Amino acid sequence: MPEGVDFKDLQRRMDGAVSAFKQDAASLRTGRASSNLLDAVQVQAYGSSMPINQVANVSVPEPRMISVSVWDKSMVSAVDRAIREANLGFNPIVDGTNLRIPLPELNEQRRKELVKLAHGYAENARVAIRHVRRDGMETLKKSEKDGVIGQDDHRTQQDRVQKMTDDTIRMIDGLLTEKEAEIMQV
Image 1 (cartoon, rainbow, N blue to C red):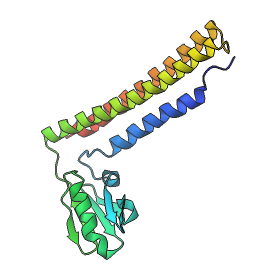
Image 2 (image 1 turned 180 degrees about the horizontal axis):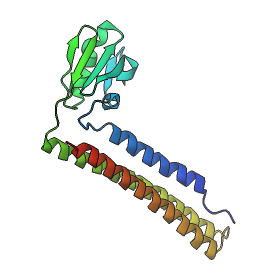
Image 3 (image 1 turned 90 degrees about the vertical axis):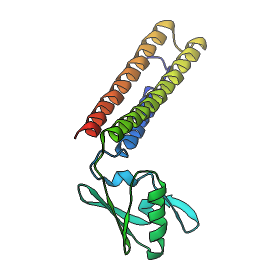
Image 4 (image 1 turned 60 degrees about the vertical axis):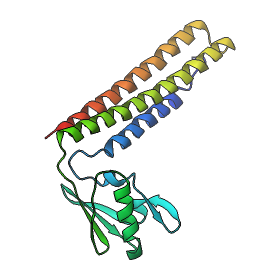
């Protein structure tokens, strides 16, 4: 088949959008504790901003509790402040070099807000996938214009790019449905 589009590259980029969506969705609170809930927390430590997992160990000792063991005693207040300022709705309890974070029960309104947030993450992923499709289509048009591929190959490859796009967006929609069910579960 004459060269037109690098399908492996397009698939890699689409998979990257799916992976980013999965990571964003994992950070949403579903009523169960997960160490991923604190992934977005940045701590001001040693003159720079760094992820919480570089200054402390994050674990889940029970289903509704997150434990953060800070390695450097002088960083406990900075970690506490970072968690509170991250607007995750957590109120850490400081216990020496450990912070315990109880997860309150989610009410119906908060669950709906989380579902809206999940929909926003899914839409961002769909937009990224459509950008990849657009890049592929532009490459095909240029290849046909330059005489690298013929009209039939252009149409065949265009259909293949569209099928990849549809399959990837369907995957995002499936993951969104699962996350929505997980969030709304009482």
